[in-house]
Image (cartoon, rainbow, N blue to C red; front, side, top):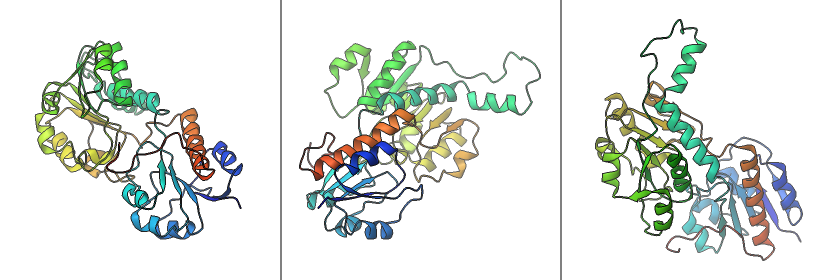
Length: 324
């Protein structure tokens, strides 16, 4: 008998085709999000699940799925999945790293440029019919070329952003828990420094760390106060890495110059203070929103799910807590 796989929400069609070769697919072709109670019911007979960041794969949900062998996430992040509960049951968890690196790095730099050069404000100004003449100080923004970029995290995406920054002649600083990036850092002319030094010296601080207990509110009141008043914060990592209330206060009090955010602490809710500020560029978590990338993410998750259920090794397993 073929294993049964739940696909929780709408995906690109190739993923369903991949799964149907080996599995019976329970496909929820909808954009609606299942709550934990409904997810438990749908997983009662499932051997695998292809899920998204919106799906609460909590300990209770996992414990209520007696046949579950694999959880395949269509994303790099996996903080919606209780990895310890999955590991205790011997359930394999997979994600989709690598394929969204360049798209997310592009988006990061687009946000950086947009907030520095006030591009959304300029477009709104034009569309509102307010552009009557050229003025010497009309919508002037901040320099990017030659400025200092501080990367908090220096993994795949952080390094890809550094490559883009090098093309702008930027001085590149990074902070990282790992010392294994020496060759890449040397290639890019990037310097590893403590986080406090990075915050004090950078004109742009860009976040590229996963969401873990130790990175939740990594950027809070203390860190924002260490930044230059002329500096900008860019976040395309995970929303809870930043204390959003502290960020709003810092922006309102002009402790920093602005922010570019693609992720938020309580998605899809956005802090109303952020919505009211003119010096913030806000995007609805579109870092990897390139058609080819999203389609490949869906296909990779489906392939890894099918691999586990047919006795093969997945290409992108997520390490269980306490393992490397």
